[in-house]
Length: 346
Ligand code: UDP
Ligand code: MG
Image 1 (tube, rainbow, N blue to C red):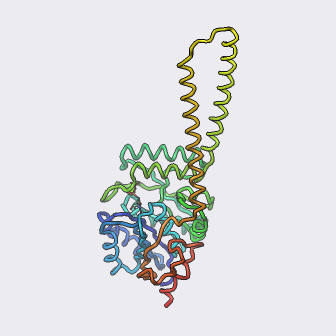
Image 2 (cartoon, protein in one colour; image 1 turned 135 degrees about the horizontal axis):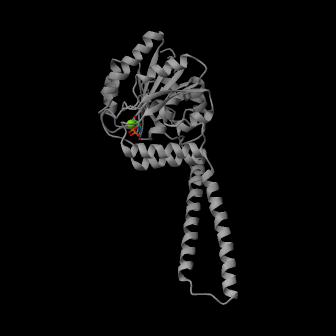
Image 3 (cartoon, rainbow, N blue to C red; image 1 turned 90 degrees about the vertical axis):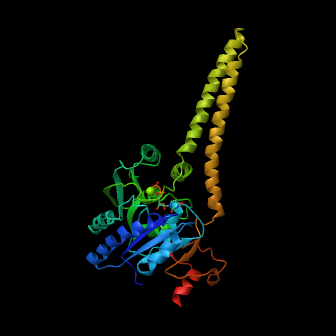
């Protein structure tokens, strides 16, 4: 297969309910793209270790949709890791990422491509102009997330741009070269600072199935976003420490004066409050430190954030074809490891 002009990376985890609808809407859009531009495309479906019928439906769909490529991860690695796996394997001159649940309308892809064709940009973000279809809770948490991130990480992060975007090959190569684990792509891409544009769109409700983002996962994403891009929380700990020291100095002066003038009272309350407050601040600072130490630790371990089980393009059927010493999920510099490339070259 020659290098496609456009790759569309779709991470999916247990999306059997929505998958047929996705194919129904995505395929005509991409066929229109191919017809209009005379260029080829590929869809890189990253099956994030689904336990439902997702892999079966993908296999069946692939039979009469040659542009559909299925990458299967061995186990559920999470939305961001699945996206990273797709980006590492996508071959297109332009690469789009889109959710599987049709919250990001596939038709908007054509607008993203059109904006890219106008030239001068490496990234086109699809920005949610209207969130009225999201639940009140989702809207509230999303607003808090983007506010906090823009404040702490920087104004260059486009508000309300999730993981629906189009990136040039140069951008994707730059992302693939980053050694960082647990990367939050919606922050990593703006941080590159490549020329970008935005296209507004209306976010639809999920077409079928239910959200795969629990509150716990949302919190994890927020913590990874913050600690991955800012050391402000660590500085916060310093400020707390300084404030605490100042307060202690004042309290000490007060205590000494009270002692000298003989006005000491059995101050159970103040002692209790002071001990509790200092304890709380210390625990908070320790927790913050722990977050960064944890990041350093996982980075040092250097474990890949995902493991690829198979890639329909390479038709890697079993592990025996692969060099056991090569971490299959690790693709550096967007290159396929020699072992993984072997079967296709035969
Ligand atoms: N997803 C994934 N792995 C996961 C969780 C989610 O690949 O562990 C995919 C999911 O199938 C969907 C996208 O990430 O295509 C966004 O997830 P979802 O729609 O559940 O999140 P929400 O839109 O509710 O924030
Ligand atoms: Mg969704």
